[in-house]
Image (cartoon, rainbow, N blue to C red; front, side, top):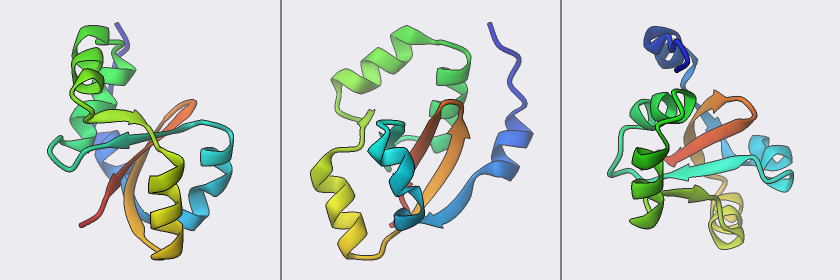
Length: 96
């Protein structure tokens, strides 16, 4: 199990323009997190390799790869998203 500094993750979570994350999206490294979930809770679960929890969220459609449609919507709206990095991924959540 990985040691996770939740306070550090909280400090690193930030609002960012979706357009600034395009390179990560293009390389398949962006993960969508539903607004029904806590972004940091998901980040910790991924970092700790809590596969059952993450698979459950995925099966419910609450966590998964950012789709082309979602990316285009955020791009066209010049959206700001919440983000946190869990290498090699960037987790993103709609700010709204």
